[in-house]
Amino acid sequence: MQALCRDGGYTLAEWIAEASQLPIEGLEWYAGFLEMKEETAWSGFREQVEARGLVIPMLCCSPDFTHPDLDFRGDQIRRQKEWIRMAAELGARYCRVLSGQRRPHLAREEGITYTVECIRACLPFAADHGVTLILENHYKDDFWNYPEFAQKSDIFCEIVSRLDHPNFGVNYDPSNTFLAGEDPLDLLRLVLNQVVTMHASDRYLSEGTIEDLRREETGAEGYAKRLRHGEIGQGLNDYDAIFGLLKSVGFGQPHRNNWISVEDGVDGFDQLERSVAFLRRKIAEYWPE
Image (cartoon, rainbow, N blue to C red; front, side, top):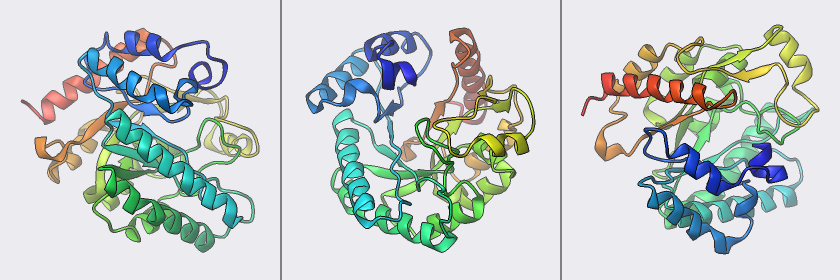
């Protein structure tokens, strides 16, 4: 993320070339990539991806809708609409949204209201562009100072319940629920019918406890240093239970156009290859062709 979004040490062309060696169907995109600043470049990256037989199914964005200032939130809505246009230009059907940062003194109802109002303001624009907005049970954007406001399931589910719209759904990440001190299967059961995409991951703490993580996750940009992405299938997530639940409501049927993203590779390409292989085996088991 640093190389692609901050220092330019890794180009999107290099990333596309390397990732296309894997047995995958698509590349999830991030709105904060350095090379996406110029709108004239958007279509070219779509062409590069599609030339390798892949598509861009999802654009991940990190709007910050929980700021107390009305003008700030208005600017975030404008940015989210630009990202929706970006998603459409890239051919992405899905565009991730977040609630925003869990700032000190932000009241529960205040944050929920801000988030719901801002997402509602974006939904007609998304529908006009053929894009579905997906809210993730997120932990923390790489470049935020505070964790996600909707990290806990009660707030997340309350926001989801207030956004009944054909162009709205849920991006489910099981690992993030562990970081909230909750059970990923409990959350999945609560939002099962709204899940349209999934981030497959297996995070772990390199040292210490969740309580240690809590002490160092607020006030500093990005993820705490003790937090790691692990090899998928080697962590705490029960993928048989997760995929079984998803299949039970029709997730993965061809007409649904659902996607599972691979969140790994921080510790090297070899690990990423093993994570992809694990997921392909599980997908073949639960959704045989």
